[in-house]
Length: 351
Image (cartoon, rainbow, N blue to C red; front, side, top):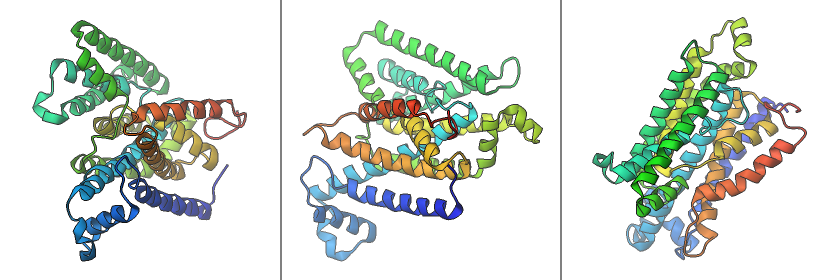
């Protein structure tokens, strides 16, 4: 189904309003029993420095809202936006509706990096962020390896990228499992398992300050490349016929996507399904044009992960569910539903 310019603008404004509402509403949820007035008093003071709320400039309420909850919500926004946008791009790059940021080995590479960091202490020079940084390096290294393999024996194409990603993913998983087996450290294994389930609990303003510009700039870049992304759905032969060679663009998009996913993994661990479900749902409703698909997926992905994180905080009393578990519980049935819909097809056409 197509979308007129006026319709697209209306949907964009509604989603932006819903995103702002989601951010403001989600910070009122948590295990700490705070009133809505206390929460927004802290936010009003920190954002606008209103003297009326100076009593909330410090103290336990201030710390819960401004140091714990608010950066966590913004981190959920960044991670959700980044994963959804990268999912759209990956599906176009490999011309496969089942692709997401993790199909091409990025998830396994990140997990391998985290495993090495925890088990062998590599990356200790990065201090408290060592596991996240090693995961980021693993994701980036895996992406470059996939590109290198896909270009062996000729220029890469969608099929070669998928096969290279599957092969590298299998190797990374095997190496990681082997490392866990030979070290046999139960504490380290538990830490690795918790990290690979994904969590936003470690959110800090410093981490948000790094991730936010990366995701925002990356999203704008991909939005500007909507013509090439649309051409990728037609295939290499059709694009060459139209006078555009997508080989270089495909490699650049892979690298930029890996950069965004690597930072998301560094900040929140491994969270699956966002880059798969959100593009599917948005494409079915609003059509296939990436000029509209990219910004809409960015907003929907951000909103989705914000509320998923709220669920993680409130489902279990005095505890927290890893967000990767909840997203998978939500995502798997939704994905099955999308797949069995007779009206579904890659690009929104009938299957």
